[in-house]
Image (cartoon, rainbow, N blue to C red; front, side, top):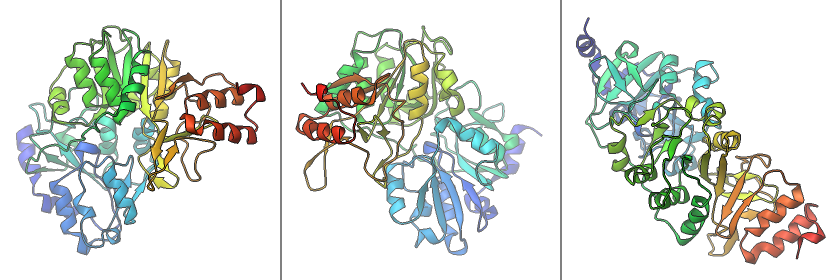
Length: 447
């Protein structure tokens, strides 16, 4: 049977496809821009007859239809590998929960049975090619591991999904697919960037000054990493490489400025490796059939052993706050969940093992509370309930608008001193007093 004959045989409607889902099932929506649309709506339409459906996904770019039904928590539970603002709102209704992880480990979770079963997997793909493959778009991440685990695989074809070339596990063959649905071809969800602030610019300039020619870059989500990307695009840096968890708009700007060649990469020379991509349309257009880009699974991009092979690896990520011990929280505000662990620790560890590598945790020194008062992001100890994303033994460089400090190899009092040195001046005296109370301050520290 030809691939086209198989296609016709497996082609069905969204409403028919979701009939295989029954109460109590675990359904995987894939990841980010690959979340189903037509299938999601069809499943939502069945809400009155379904109970206790567990769904996995992550980084929603638009509210899933199953979250908009009457009393959604009675029918569907969203289990997120990494939360967007949309998913944070779903937490408040009792419909969504976070699944803590190191992003690099997710494919293994599926393959070794660390997750509950996958009764049905359904996600968006690009149209089938002449060889019978449906490309995952910018979502290689862990989708092949999902397909291997799933009892049933349903793909939703979208002509607007970019075809992202890779090396392995960037597509699923029709032989592994049980049902095919042709959706309405909506535009792929976008992830806009927040305009850069004056503080973002100051922090970014300090980081860019630390980056050598030929460095390999990883940028995280957020305003500061994107600002770093913009400054690099306008800098004199050359022969840069890319090896990242997430491909963002900033990389497009740097590449279009002629700064990225990948010529000095120790592995995957000349190619920009990434586990998933999300941004504006310019990112999807750039990734589409671009042989310079390499869509690969996250257990490759985020593996510390892979990262460490790349000389002068530069990892740039955000944080919510940090305490005087050097514990970094990038996930919550107390018990209020914000995002997730993602791959930050993977890259903090991997960058330090790279020859000449550096990892930067960047943040503004302060923020304004709901009551309008200025509050410090540098705290004596993390707020009760806050999550430690990077332990005190892991952090390399901390950057705020007041400076950049290397925290490796220091005693507790030395670390406290350096962290306080980049705090907002209005909070330094009380941080010193707190450090002294916690016995991590020496009288000789204060000049």
